[in-house]
Amino acid sequence: MNISIVADTTFCKGFPAGYPFRVINFAKACERMGLGVQLFLCNRNFVTKKDILWLKKINPKIKFFLIPPNLFYKKSFFNNFLIRHKSEIVQFENPEFVINNLQVIAENQGKSIFILELHNLYYQLNRNTKEFQILETALHLVDYVICFSQFDGDKIAHDFKSSRQKIIISPLFVSCQDYKIYGPNLDKDNVLFIGNLFYKPNVEAANFLIKKVYPKLRKNFPTLHLHFVGNYPNKLFKKSTSWTFHGYVSGQKLDHILKETKICVAPLFSGYGARVKVLEYAAYSFPIVATSRAMNGFEKLSSVFIVSRFDFANQLAKYLRQHKLLVLAGSKNRKAVEKYYEAKKIMPKLINQIVYRPHSKLYPKLRTSFLIPPRSAKIYFPFWLKEERHNLKVLKSIYVIENGKVKKLSQ
Image (cartoon, rainbow, N blue to C red):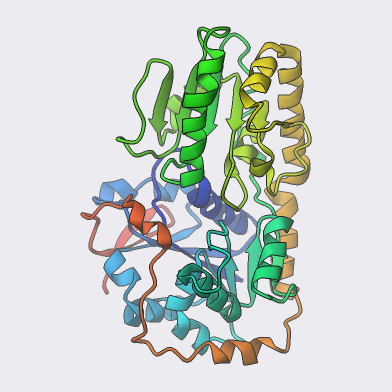
């Protein structure tokens, strides 16, 4: 059985976070489950052929199609491209892609299983907003929607009156074999935050750590240093000797940062979706201080220190001093990941739900009513493109990366 994953995001060599993290981990887990995996990736940042060589290192058995934006969002081309490289399962990573690929869905009803994976409930709870209407239409068109937490699934069922038979709750996962055990470095007072700093809730968290938390701790912890790992806009934050923005890092640089880390934090106060950072902190065996909002989807990580916004600085200071507790918490976090969030345990159940889950008799009738827009209908773009994280000088050709080789495809 084959699965095609349609994704439009900025893939960077280095430490994947958020949406790219899930796409990479899901693709690798599908391959390890024995599925043939095709990843259709919109080229947002690859400028030279050399730039894309690292993709084959993710997993040589995954087939990557790297497609320039002008073709990825050309309906007459991309729908036919997907049909030509068809799979039994097609998973869209954003509701806009579902609507843009109406032709594929219309021509393959009953032949392929169509899935929408929701990384973030970014819509506003107002039926008149564009985001709400896009997601509502997409939910009608697919066979299943995957949510990462019960909270998200309940909101989809309630806000969109969506059949619970369509909703699959499957938490984020990792393959623990990919994560070295670090644990807290008790000789340092280094605090780590991981996240894409083009995403508003992460920006709020970074500013909170710099403006609210650090000033309260610097007197009693003179060597305290904040480390931020993840893509960030250069003009957004002031430089300082007390914190460092590393951007995307990998290899020895990432290893050095993790070896120097004492405690990880997730002071999140807004947004929906599951928080990748919390799962990765735990997989690395670090102690974690987080707000309850950050724990959406990771309720079984029972050794995380959950604190309020108003007491975050005081509680962080308290835990920085309790070395034995930090070691114990980090160890328990790793064990909880192995028990509850390991890919080998979650993926078989997820695939069985997708393949063998009974379909509602209402689906064909509901779907048909949403298949009216012609091919010339409006193209929908992901809402985050306004962040302008993409490079305008990307490769203009289509490339396929397969079995360790990179080939240019004719259009």
